[in-house]
Length: 60
Image (cartoon, rainbow, N blue to C red; front, top):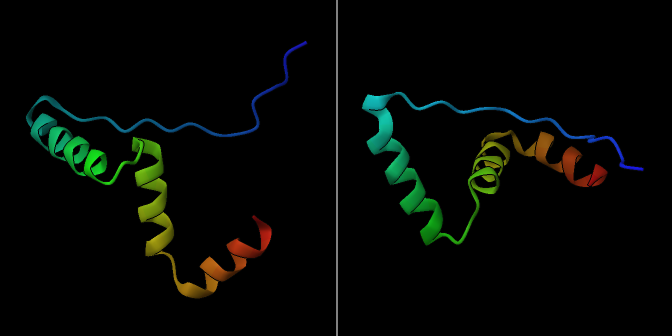
């Protein structure tokens, strides 16, 4: 029996005129040896106030 997924997925859409941005993003995250989702989550976490970061560290 399979377990049900417990996470959430989001979609980030790049229009045709934004494909150069996507290519630049891929080059940047590859240079940092990161996945797309990992890079985005890391940037979101760093953008949070330190108090929120500290609270999240307690629960993880």
